[in-house]
Length: 443
Ligand SMILES: Cc1ncc(COP(=O)(O)O)c(C=O)c1O
Image 1 (cartoon, helix red, strand yellow):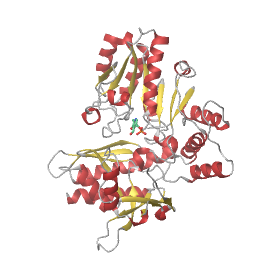
Image 2 (image 1 turned 180 degrees about the vertical axis):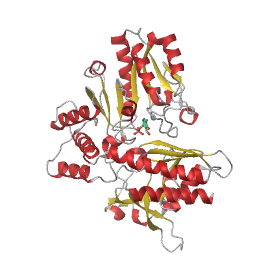
Image 3 (image 1 turned 90 degrees about the horizontal axis):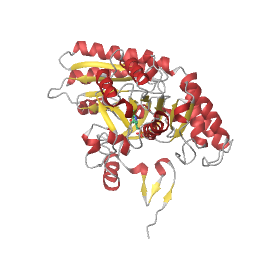
Image 4 (image 1 turned 45 degrees about the horizontal axis):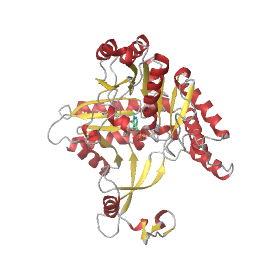
């Protein structure tokens, strides 16, 4: 029979005689390789330990003198958990609320089969901020596009009148909607798909930014198409922006063919792009929207689908659900994540700081026109792309930035994404810009 002895907190946390504070980066890596599934390739030689302030991580690196297990250094968080920490690490508004609710309000954990008083607050806040009629809470980001797919199909059969089991969902090439079977069935990335088949039927792919291709498909199969699910800006694909007029035309086509226009804002939502939700940058209104990541303020996983009343109303008791979707602590966390975003004017800060970071990218491009192809972004969802030439390697750049105290990570071989906390200061942005300049110069 397996036994486990657990004691202490923080560095004193000890599991079966192994004290966490004694482990250097190499030992952490060895344990992860031995005991964990290999679904990620974390940056080498660094382990995050704690938070100094909203944009600064304390991390452990190998001791160059080889005397201690590790040294501790500050790291500017240029990625903030792929936009899950838009409000900044340990945002005070959210942490205070969570602590107060756990300690003073004695918040319970109950399932959705009994009402709790915080659900009302969550629904009021989430419908107000999204300007949508109704909201359905979930937990992980991937569950939100997954639910949009289910809602689309049921709406397609019950409202639009698509013959049973013939509904089609259209998605964009190079999309990223997560790792569920719907998401990987919709994916065009072989790494995400290989040997995970058979995939879900009823999914068709069109190129992103090609409204003509979408129209042609709608013309051909519109009677059976329930929805088009698309990211307003493709984040994981390397921050690919829509061309001018794309989303407006998509919204019009969806209306014309009675097809739901569904946006996946798991990464672009919650002020990341300089608007509360990225679709607002393009003056369109989706029928359904998936949110996640910063909906939980980096404190706990919270996701939801917001949308039109008549679409969300296809749900009936028992047809959908989630034990922890909208449970009391998640509801409180979401309410205060919204409050922090609004009270701290994070959309405005994302716009201002994003413009400044794009300015750095542009001056670095001008300085090194043979190395940098372009810098791009909206708000603080940004990336710079290098030419595909020997020596210009996104992973190498990430490791060099790490040495310089910046955490960023390549999205593709030649593209490096920067998406720091929306609370970042002007000095923080300049620090990122200066580091990138140094690293690119040395390449
Ligand atoms: C657009 C989009 N949808 C869905 C997801 C999946 O979210 P999660 O990893 O929390 O399940 C992501 C994650 O990066 C995303 O960027």
